Image 1 (cartoon, rainbow, N blue to C red):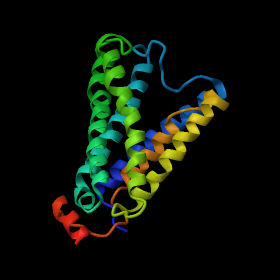
Image 2 (cartoon, one colour):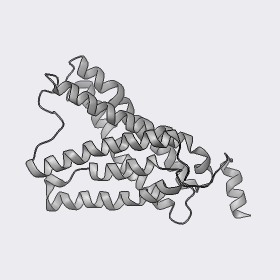
Image 3 (tube, one colour):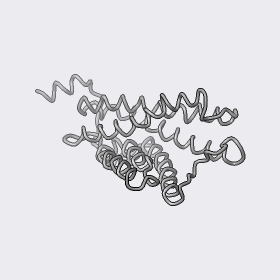
Length: 216
């Protein structure tokens, strides 16, 4: 089974992100609280804890961008919809990586309130849509690879994103404290991190040539 350094980095960082998300899920479900410091996070150890959490998120999303860029050859032999989802995922991952790696640390270290002004606008108009986009585009990519999957293990793992997302929605009605998006986030992150693992070797081929060969 072929696994490259960028798969390892993406998998480890997204498992770390998943560990944070699932721990927060358990804490929220059992106590109603959160491991993420939300009350005056600019003071004491809270600022360092929040900084680490933000950096883990940022590295995880940045690592997924590397996977999506490096696996271009395998996407080139996938269907057109999968190739469109690749571009969409690169965009939403970048929209999440930049705030977590750059904007939020600057705001924290500079004592700028994260929940107000420019940071609030970024979260509302960029972060939230991009976060939802991760789920939607990952699930769509997985479904597009059901019949023909040149992306290996990751393409199959992504089939679990939709059930995980539906589970979160169901929990929102049954037991809201357990309805954490991290449940679907970890499935999407691991699936994207493993794109290309276990697949046959592929060389870069122009999409138009691939389609012409498929219809010949």
